[in-house]
Image 1: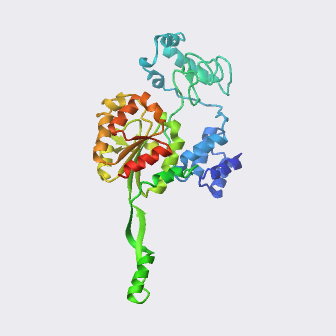
Image 2: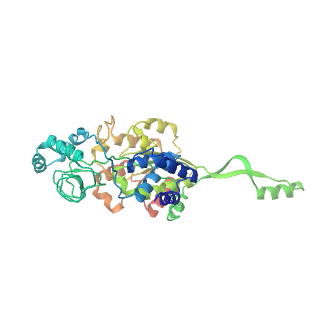
Length: 391
């Protein structure tokens, strides 16, 4: 299995060496960890990954290779933060659902029972109506049904009735090394080009050499600087939430843009632009950059591209404090308007089919702010967007 894991990492273009693989095996032989998948995950990640940009690839390969293995420990304890469950506000519960929750004795009874079950259970449980497991009617677990349940270890809800998702949610950075399934995205992006020759003369100027040689009567070699695309591009990617369904398409766009635009900068935001953006989703809360600093750093000749589905509550755009993650002093619409005033060439690329925009009020608001310059993230939409930016 470990050899298969090593080959799958290589297949996913994760740069792991044989020496690193042998180090991992030596650590396993030395019993430096307990017999738990969780411990093996951290040990193998520390042994094999040298660059944090490959962490997301590693996670995907690890999940694929070891899917279905349980984390088993003889003395496993789990701390249950009650505030996670209490954070569920009344506006998300109907009167009927509140009554159903009370049928188990309220929040305190649910938490007390869950802690007791975790202490009693020592192995995977499937089916049934008591223990924590899958495909049953217990209030705790996954892939089953109970009107007052706590979902544990399941990617998403099936009945929409769980009290709280127990999985830690993290946004993933876009992988700019993804190989495109088609070259058409690159072809569309190439419409946005402005070539110029700058720097040291490193290329032979054949026409100039011929003219000068004919004029001088002897070989007179002329050199010119490399011809480069001088377009400056600034891209803002909406990440997380409803955009998770469009990660593959955004990765392809990101990869193509990194290839085509040598002078490209990118930042992430969530749902709507506010006073802070970031470059690393793993450190998004600790390493945010001021949006004002970004707008002052990159001059008005930059071509600006927003990528997002524009699907959110209207309040997230039009009201201060409308953000779902923090208290924003100014409305998102204020920041979007500032961008359109500073930069002459701005477009919004939307991965949602254009026929659905009319049914999404938030998309209509953003489209209006951008002066109707919202385009679908399709080849035709890309072509139109690049033509708009080239004006």
